[in-house]
Image (cartoon, rainbow, N blue to C red):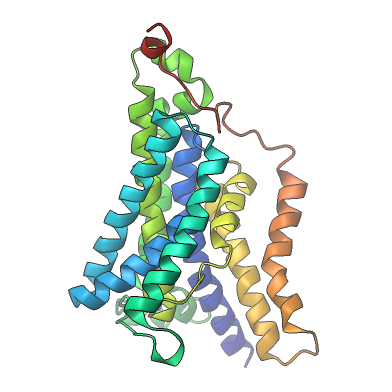
Length: 312
C-alpha cells in the first residue's frame, strides 16, 4: 500500500514538474541575456492551444509539437522586437503578452475546439516502453513511465548547463546579461544575442504548453496554465539562475502541486480552495526567503541601445 501511494505521488509530481521545468529553462536563457520575461504565462497558453490545434488538424501529436514550437518561437521574436529593438518596458510588454495570450486562446479555443464535455481531445504524447527499468521497485513506475517530453526536459538541463557554462556562446550570453556595453565594445552584437535567447525562450514555452495540453490533459481548456508561467519565473530566481537549481525548484513546486491533489483525494476536511493555494504559497515563501540573497544578472530588465545608435 505504501509503495502504491508513493509511486502514484512521485509519478504525479514528476509529471506536473515538466511544464514548469521547460518554461523555467526558457526563462533562464532570456534572463541570462538580460531579458525579464513575465509574459511566460501567455506564451505557455499560446503554446498549449497551438499544440492541440496542430495535433488535431495535422493528425499527429508531432505536428502539434512542431506547430507549438514554431508559433511560440515567433511570439518570442515579437517580444524581442518590442523589448530589444524598440526598447519598450519589458514588464509592460510581458503583462500585455499575458493578457493577449489569455484573450486569444480563449476566443480561438472556444471557436475551434469547443468547451466542456464537447471539447475536442487529441492523442497524447507517447511514453516509451522500458520494461526492465519500469519493473524497478519504488522508482521504476514513477520515473520510467513518463512520456517522451519528460525525458527530453530532463535531458535539456545538462545541455543548457553545457551551453551556458562550457561554450563561447554561453559566455557571450552571460556577459551580455551582466554588462552589455562592455560586450558591445568587444564587437559582440548584443541585440542578436538577446533575439536568439528570446527565440529559444519562446520555443521552450511551446514545449511547456504541449507538456500541459498534449502531455497531461490531451485537450485545451481556458487558462489551463493557471499561474505556472509565474511559478517558472520564481523557479529560476529560487534556483539562482542556474540550470541545476532550476531543475530542483521545478521539482519542488511540482511536488507541492501533486501534494495538494493528494490531499483532495484523501477527503481531508479542508476547503479545496486552501489546498489549491498551497503551491502558490510555497512560491511566495521561497521568493521572500531566498530572493533577497540571490544576485540576478546585472542588466536584467534594462533596455540597451547599441554604441552605433548612441553616437548616431
